[in-house]
Length: 243
Image 1 (cartoon, rainbow, N blue to C red):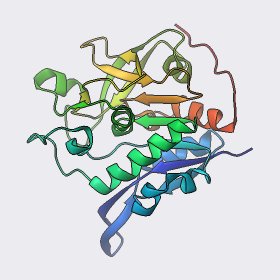
Image 2 (cartoon, rainbow, N blue to C red; image 1 turned 180 degrees about the horizontal axis):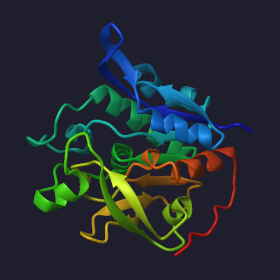
Image 3 (cartoon, helix red, strand yellow; image 1 turned 30 degrees about the vertical axis):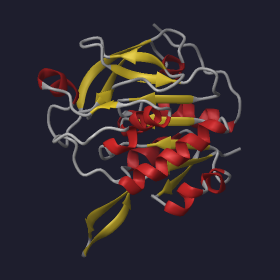
């Protein structure tokens, strides 16, 4: 079976060739990682009709990937926007919140990456820290448009460690926000050892519900997106992580 992975995408103004217009946009690394793992990659642009009836869309895919992108609208988790929270996309938030909630309800494999991990937390009633200050922010987003490199320590035996293939890994990240209150039922399964920041969350009891704050699509050796594809094929046992 070739599993179909729906990848939530943004709508952004983009320039290509002679054109400058709105485009459905997602870095190609996500599709490349899905395809390399034997899956079919499908872009899912924001869709208010699908947000009202997410089951119709989810019936057509086998796994859901909540990708990175803009800051979430703080109103989606009951907070007022702070000055550092820029240019949220309420339409995308509504769409992804509906898909994530419905996918978890039907126990569909779900992976959240960066913004997607934050969305997974919000979908389960959690909140976000809207801006990391000083050295903490510099460690995870030192330069806009460039990835930061640091290590993450994962809980031995956790879904995060099994998906990544090790209990301690080097990652690429680019974020200025972090988890606040943890969503219902979620467990933190990875942290940055330098500052204790939560880097991975998962929902025990589900077939595959994982969020990572780093960008596995930027690492061709990462097995995280491949683990989502494997889970979307059906129940499989992921290998134990190395230490």
